[in-house]
Length: 172
Image (cartoon, rainbow, N blue to C red; front, side, top):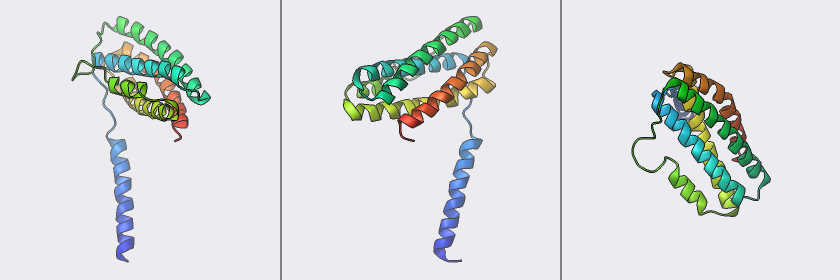
């Protein structure tokens, strides 16, 4: 076997192993209060950035996506508030600083215009939704509080659909 063929074969095996490793190390469910904080911050980011998109973007696909996000995230916020109240769980923001997790991204989006804004917005939505689907999916399966787990299970299909839409607007 030639050295090049061996290298390509080993590279393919390494790539497959990385993919398998990623799947084997799924995201763990956050503690209850952190889960509530995560969802609140994710909702705030997506709603605020989508409001910005409605002001800054002239792209119909971006504007349509932004409208969808504002409506769906408001609904998720309502069911989370109810579930949190029923569960008796308080909000715990992301540890490590006074600024919300996505504040820097919102600041950057605020400084962009036109197609630069559209591209950055689409990519930011995609990244946020990948993380949200991972976290909400994990909590829906193994979260510590039954009321919050029900909320996660109810929100999860919406987030998955939003992720697919985000992939389309980000060109993936």
